[in-house]
Length: 346
Ligand SMILES: Cc1cc2nc3c(=O)[nH]c(=O)nc-3n(C[C@H](O)[C@H](O)[C@H](O)COP(=O)(O)O)c2cc1C
Image (cartoon, rainbow, N blue to C red; front, top):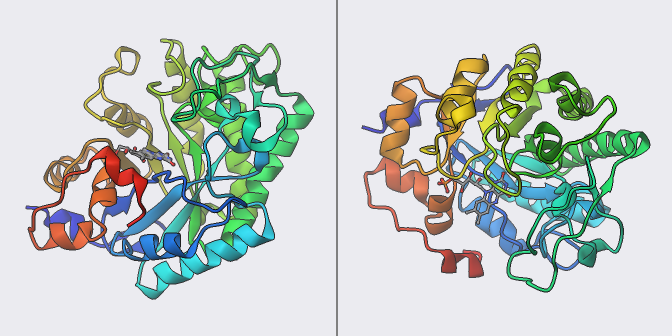
């Protein structure tokens, strides 16, 4: 019933995956205080190497990218050394791993890095850092054109660091209301210059990051995650549809490893997308698509059989079941996820 998940799948000339099950990126906030991955993180990822591909938890590209405690980085030499232990452990167990490259934009908090919070426009997000209620979000500074140039270069630098650290590739985190996504939605982007107002302008930052990262490490090793349906950290606007139509049409010209939906529950319907995020992306994007959001092995198999997407990313079940792939393969029951599992790294 789930046999289709266990077919090999070729992303491109450089990368073939053993199966269609991807471990979704899952922030765990377990790096040390220098944002260096620990030995426990190497063990955690190595135990999940049965996935066709692991996408790492989101990794910040520079200090002002941080919005949560103890999220790992990929900008210092010590961080690169720490990640070498993780990638080595995954490779030793026969797995593959991409680094998810992250800047949270206006969801950053100065508490973590002591500087300005950057975003497309000076529009703050309501609320506070999860589980740190006294850290309410601040009004960000709208980035200058020089800031944008530096940010794009820093994504490329982090991608090079990822390859040096032994990652098989990178997934650019363009989803979930963080920096890149903030450029793509009207409620967070009110810029009057060449990065705002029109679909072409609003997609410019995302395409510049994709361009710089593919130039740095080669397009076979670069993927992108997008949230055409706004559901987290920002509100959607029906006009966003045209931005994603334009962006995805441009991406069709660039052979990336895959495009990944960014959504928690793929049953969610978005009027302005005409339904589910995955269906909208399937109808617009011509390359390999990773679906995600509340799937079981059975429902994912059906979706792939029905050509709704090509690979599935599994998130919470992988926290609850390090041996998720083995369990599914042998038809064993999977342990249910619960939030208290986030307290420990097993
Ligand atoms: C604890 C937790 C941490 C997450 N961290 C990230 C992250 O770092 N990057 C990201 O793109 N998505 C992140 N997500 C979203 C997941 O990648 C995934 O889209 C979501 O959990 C839905 O898939 P699932 O139903 O299989 O869990 C996170 C989700 C959870 C529950």
